[in-house]
Image (tube, rainbow, N blue to C red; front, side, top):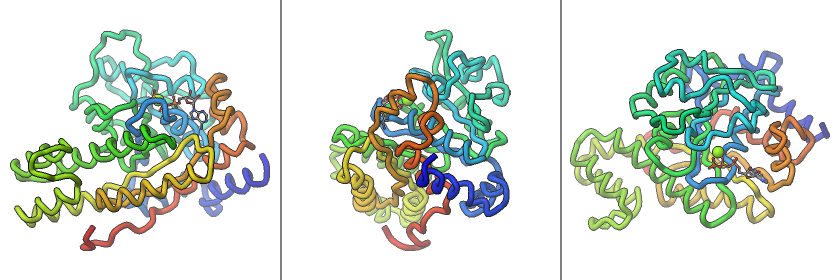
Length: 343
Ligand SMILES: Nc1ncnc2c1ncn2[C@@H]1O[C@H](COP(=O)(O)OP(=O)(O)OP(=O)(O)O)[C@@H](O)[C@H]1O
Ligand SMILES: [Mg+2]
């Protein structure tokens, strides 16, 4: 590992300040208000092929190599491939077993990967005709994941904004939105965050007519002229101030994290900042820019060989970028909007 790599990795594990990585994760958990259970992090982004699996696998491997226990879960029953990225060509078990109610104990779905401290729940599906999980089954699955003994549980999601994907993204702690510097990906990332935000709102508001109003607002061309979440907020507040307060609370707690993958220039790196500022102006929400990963042939090599890039080429630039992202994930979140402060 080169100097930069060593420094970055030491910075990650050094957060423990002489204690174990697990102890450090617990301190971190307290700083984020969680007192027990793993930090459940979903990876979404709307667009297919932007590197959600690549980022989830490599970030998981980075944290595992720094001493944290990580369980990487494939949440993409349609296009399961996290196992391949993590070097488990033939998984023994799968989420499909839980979905089909053949296995109720999620712990039995967990298997080792070649990387120490990094375990996997795959989503291989021997029967392609088997049904997708129902909403209640997805909720049960998430509940079971929260009981797992690990510092982190990463959930690699499929493309799109289907209810299956959004359910997972919404109920987890701090979703990561992966995008690449291409207009279509940026557009899909906004659509993805918008869908997640509105779904969370719909669950939070109490009055049925206001929930309906949220559904109306989800259609961008609605006749009431509600174009942005901020428009909707004003409308909800004018109808019912108590519901308006709930709305603002959702805005305060919905804090997606952004990773820009496949950057090739300084301009590409800036994309994360501009997405953050659009989120603030358009949604009234604070998104955090976790970091970026360069476009590199090493990514393709690593996928081909079934070894995460950070393990295969720990001196690479990409490994350094992943270490930076991991460090940010471990740090207490920067202050968002203050209690009572208006978006
Ligand atoms: N930083 C990168 N540099 C070069 N190639 C990359 C990079 N990140 C990902 N790729 C390539 O893009 C391909 C798609 O990545 P990945 O499977 O992680 O995307 P995804 O968002 O999970 O896709 P899906 O929506 O189908 O699940 C990978 O096979 C990999 O070769
Ligand atoms: Mg994927």
